[in-house]
Amino acid sequence: MAEKLDTGPLIEVLQEASRVAILTGAGISAESGIPTFRGEEGLWKKYRPEELATPTAFSQDPKLVWEWYDWRRGIIGQKEPNPGHKVIARWEETFPTVSLITQNIDGLHQKAGSKNIWELHGNIWKLRCTEEGTITENYNTPLKEIPPLCPNCGALLRPHVVWFGESLSPTILQKSIQLSSECDVMFVIGTSAVVQPAASLPFEASEAGAKIVEINLDPTSLSLYADFSIRGKSGEILPLIDEELKKTPKA
Ligand code: BV8
Image 1 (cartoon, rainbow, N blue to C red):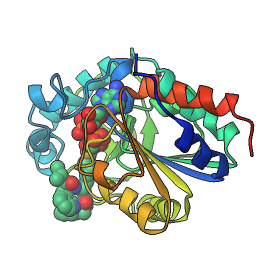
Image 2: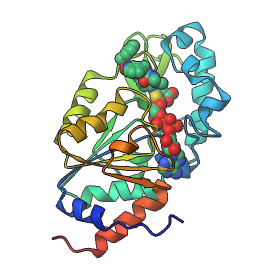
Image 3: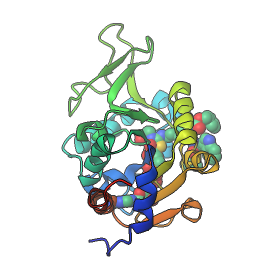
């Protein structure tokens, strides 16, 4: 269990906060049993995702790329949100506004009940027609055919995710930058703060005067700039903070 956390100063900040932004990465889903990208048992270990999660890999070998995503969908499909996801979902009722910006594509925040979500890198349960651009949701694990084809035009379907070397949706990125620059507090949870442009959002928030609360097992390049850098598992730390918040009446 996380050592006794001195949340006093943090609770004072949270009591004053009305606009809370939350940026999550793969670490928030680790306690649900989903491998992170750069951890010991990470996805990057078994595969070289920078060679798989790219448009080039898909155009060269769509079957191989789909086999990787089908394997990940099989793992994710059996996993449930953990207490960290659930606290974040509950905080939509605790704070006047909570905006969740996630790098994750696993859909666990939705499963936990979060509503105000901006998915920077897409969603593994959505498929996009490479010809028509239409997006459908598909929860079959395993997929009935690999690679899946568009039932309408017969073209290849691709995962509706953002690959390395691809631009993020301008609308989602613009909104995420705006939410980062307008928030009073930004939680940065379970991300190694390596992947751009997501990793720049906390600096956007900090430069606009927000307090940064990092929750991570390890230090990251953001840790030195965070107002609060809490070491530990998000599935334990977030419930601790939530408990303290409940115990402390609003000022
Ligand atoms: C783009 C979807 C314009 C696919 C993903 C500027 C500078 C440098 C590089 C670039 C730059 N701009 C663009 C780049 C290139 C690239 C990039 O950032 N590369 C990195 C590797 C340097 N970025 C892009 O290509 C982006 N596109 O900017 O477009 C452009 C276009 C062309 C050329 C240039 C620019 C698109 C990036 C999106 C890539 N897609 N995912 C898929 O998943 O299959 S990224 C992938 O990494 C996931 O989305 C993941 O979320 C993300 C980030 O990883 P993390 O979430 O941080 O996960 P990680 O394992 O690294 O860390 C987990 C953390 O959790 C650790 O710190 C660990 O300690 C902690 N943890 C573990 N357990 C717990 C925990 N914490 C708390 N509790 C626990 N229990």
